[in-house]
Image (tube, rainbow, N blue to C red):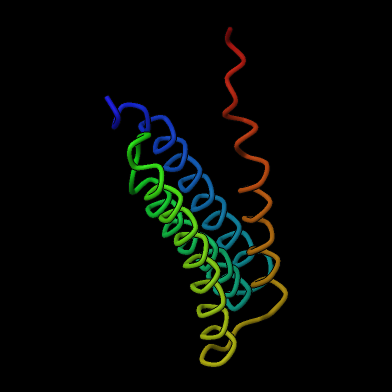
Amino acid sequence: MVAALARPGRELAKQLLLIEAGAVILLAAGMAVAVNAEWGFSSLIGGSIFVAANAVFSVCAFLFVGARAAKYVAISFYTGEALKILITVALFSVAYMYMQVELVPLKLTYLLVLGINIFAPALFINNKK
């Protein structure tokens, strides 16, 4: 019963991650064709940073379910958010220090996927009463 309560949230998280990953791939391919391969690669790296960090958060957020595990739910949620921030900082640091990336497509794609993460759940709202 408890696992059934978390199933819709998990499905929503999976759909959101797939939408984000698809947008990153399409945008990276579009930039590679429209501008050059370096912009496409940088775009792919920028979007992948967000998707990877968001995937870790999603796993942590749905690690525990149920009223009996409310304390663990809160702890895993905040742990997931902290890990998301740390992973984002670490991956941006690696990208800046060890990769030759263009900053405009890297940041642009990151911000685009962030916008998708903010506004896409509104598309999933079910108004059936």
